[in-house]
Length: 447
Image 1 (cartoon, helix red, strand yellow):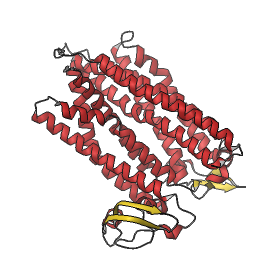
Image 2: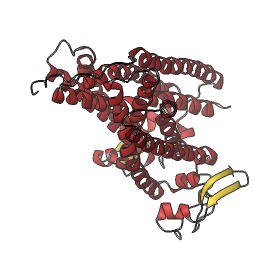
Image 3: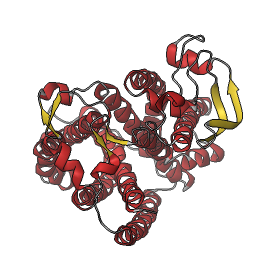
Image 4: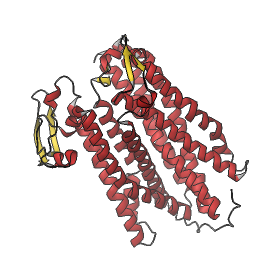
């Protein structure tokens, strides 16, 4: 492999590992705030029991997210010097705004949130949790604004080959940003929902029937059941926006080579870029046109209109199907589990509990697949129409990149195994077989 391919794989490995943890913490911070407010409002100890367990999950996830994010900034200088040289005037300030807003808020209040519940007034602890939740949102806001500008850049001008900001509002609120922000935030809450349900189901299998486990389980399932249909609508709107601004990406997602009407939705195919065709196609006639144009006779762009200017087809094609398939599984499981709980009056069967445990990290699968569609689908551009990926790469020898890539992969594999093992260890340790229902305490004073 040449240096460019290795550098791309290395950055992909870093971002793939890093994104796992903000995807959890963005949503989990708001869930913790919900638990704390409910405890303050009702005085029921089940809510604070939920908070006490899940704040540990948040702390572990937050720590790994921060550490893994640092390595990406190093790569801007080592592997991609052309990126900041050409577009640093735009992207650099956006990344700095994240530090000046999100990181400052989180750094100031995270300690109170994690360790101050018994040391500060209840209202201050609730406020700290709220501020950290706002900080996670601001972090997502600025990162997605920067990444969306790379997808659909506007509000800039090119002088001597370097991008300069002409209108900050157009840069920040670029055409794809609102759709990508909504899509990513919903993905985060769905990831958090199935993490809640999966670890609670694990505690259930360990014999824990406490009110806290039932509460966390129901919270996760309701989140999943309600937000998954919303995500489908948001995904449809995001797809239509992508069709308008990045049609070659949509053509790769659909595996469509020729522009035309009545384009089928391919359930299976093996895209072949050598012959510029698909092998073993299985599709639903006209459905892709119906989805993308809301008309079965709608004309959908084909990849042959963008020869030399479209992404690798197979990775985008299959990543899109993994994302959609996982999302459909999450929808069916959340609805089936809620119906199951209602039918059994709050009890969970062993089979359903095992299914939920198996779906614990399904949000990760869908998020990573969607991220690959987004990032690979932008190729061969690093910033669409402004900077090609090859033009931003460094001259680091391939062997050097290969060695650091191997170290990264081994480190990340070890950390991931340790993280997942720690979560299930915490859940098993917290399980209280045959625990009596949590008592209702006197309501706390208004905060």
